[in-house]
Amino acid sequence: MNSALYPTYARADIAFARGEGPWLIAANGDQYLDFAAGVAVLSLGHGHPHLVAALKKAADAPWHVSNLFRIPQAEDLAQRLVDASFADLVFFANSGAEAMECAIKTARKYHAHQGAPQRYRLITFEGAFHGRTLATIAAGGNPKYIEGFGPVVQGFDQVPFADLAAVEAAITPETAGVLLEPVQGEGGLRVFPHEFLRALRALCDARGLLLVFDEVQCGVGRTGKFLACEHAGIAPDIAALAKGLGGGFPIGACLATHEAAKGMTAGTHGSTFGGNPLAASVGAAVLDVVLAEGFLESVAQHGESLKRRLLALKERYPSIIEDVRGEGLMFGVKTRIPNGDFATAARDEKLLTVLAGDNVVRLLPPLTINQTHIDEAATKLEAACARLASSSTQKGAA
Image (cartoon, rainbow, N blue to C red; front, side):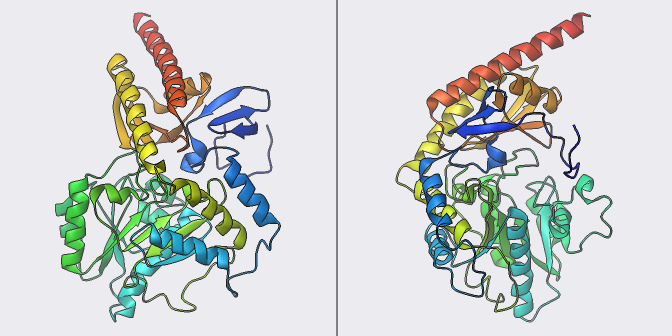
């Protein structure tokens, strides 16, 4: 099929006409259980009535006025993010990559403001994914995203996953801080051990480094806490959010303490669309639900239920499933077969998933799912595994 779009995506030949909760209905009438959620974006699922009502109400007010004027909706959303987190200040952007760019600039500017502009380098980790801009692909360090785009942006030193000794060895007089995703998404749903994060926080404090967390995918309740780093009982100096914050509407946010952001004075950074009234209104509506009493506890409980079902599948189909990883409603199934084959088999059973690195398939359902949805997803995965195992046996016999 010809398209005027850049051919940068290998798109499945399915177009969706409508959605409701965790369900998507294709143009041909097929119904899919959406455990991809737009790659962890649709935190409230499809067509959530509170989110729809907020968007419709916001559409009757000015959509955009620019950041040359006060935006009360953005001020309100920023305060709610501050109240729910470690942060004192918020900068709004339009995507996770832009939020990460702000986080990187904030970390560099902090040291320049302190009279040490030579301290601009960030230590990052193998398997990281921080976005698709020139700086964030350099931070991620994945050759397949870097190749062909000219000289790599300088300022990032990558070390092995969760290796504290390697972090210490990588620190130089030019080091500004350490950057990581508490739960790596694209890199294969690898969870940084909580004790490692606590030790890293202590190391940064001892060495005068900023700790920067990329919570674009794992934040806003995805792991059963508002921020994934809360599981370790620590806080960063800077964090980036996006994806689930807008529930499907594009918005990103860089959160920081007063200390970390003190170099970000008037004129040092900006965004034309960031935090406009429409986006901020939708973000506030998402927080109405996610921060409501008992909601995050429900995410954690449903996550435990889903994890039990996935582990049971691993026991029954060891030739198909090697490992189950994740927290809350953010899981990765590491497969012994090509992960694309597993995702295709799941889609044939009308269950949508997302591929990741390390031969992993991600399960990222809306945070609003219930036990019935978990049971149905498990049934679909069981059918997919049974078919894959049978196919593998038949190939072996042949």
